Amino acid sequence: MTAVHQHPQGDVIAPLNFYSPPEDGSAPYNLAGDVPPGAIPRNFGSLTKDVLIHDARGRESDFTLDHDAFQILRDQPPSSEPSSFTDDASIQTHYYPEVEQLLLSHVPGATKVIIFDHTIRRTSPSAPRQPVFRVHIDQTAASAAQRVRRHAASPEEADALLAPSSRYRIINVWRPLNARPVESYPLAFASSATLRDADVVPVEHRYSATGYVGQTAAIRYHEAQQWYYLSGMTGDERILLECFDSEALKGRDSGVKGGRVAHTAFEDPRTREGAEGRESIEVRALVFGP
Image (tube, rainbow, N blue to C red):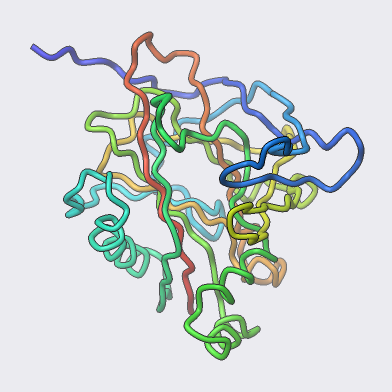
C-alpha cells in the first residue's frame, strides 16, 4: 500500500531571502543563462529574514489581481499536454493554448494574450532550472514595455498596444507538476497592496548568449509586507502572478494596488525528511485589455 504523507499546512514562519545592495554602491545586475568564465553572476547580496507566511487555503477567493496582484484558481481541467511537460515544443503546441484560454476567461476585460516563454523547475540536483530562493518580481515597468515591443507582430501594433488608453499586463501562470499535493519548497507571494515603492529595486537582467538586457526587480524587506502560500497545492490549481499592470502607473484613481507581486520559493521548516521535491511550470504572458 502506498504511504499517504501529510503536507505542511497552516501559517508558518520561514526564512525568506531579500535584497542587500552591492557593497560598492553600484547599480545591481544579474547575469542570465551561461555565465562567462570569471564573470560575477550577480553583484548584490541577500538579507535573510524570518517571515510570517499565511496559508491561503480556505481563503482562495479573497485575493484579486487588482488588489493583491495574485489570484488563485481551483478546479482547472487536466492538461492535454502529452509529454508530461518534458518537451518544449509539445508544451508550446498543447499547453500554451490552454493558458491563453485560461487568461482570457479569468482576467476581466482581457482581449489579447501573447505568451512569450515558460520555465520548468524541478528540485533534482540535475535539473537545469531549480526553484528560486530569492524574493523578486520578474519584470519592471521599463522591461514590460520592452517586452511588448519585442513580441508584438509589428512596431505599429506595439505602438497601439502601448497607447495611454490601452491596458497591458504581464501575468505568469504557475502550477505544480507533482502527482500528489506539493510537500516541499512551496511558492510564497506577497500582496501587492502591502508592497511599497521603496521596497522594489530594479535590477539589470543581462542575457549573455543573446545580448538582450531586460530588468527584473529585487525586493527589500519591510515588516508591513503580507506574505501567503497555498498549502498542498495540486495539479488542478493555478496561481496567476501579475508582475506588471499599466493601470498601476495611473495612481490611486485606477483602483489597482501596485500591480506587481513579489514571490519566491521557500523552505518550510515543517517539511518531512524525504519529502518529494516540488516540480512546477510557469508560463509568462502579455495580457491586453480592456
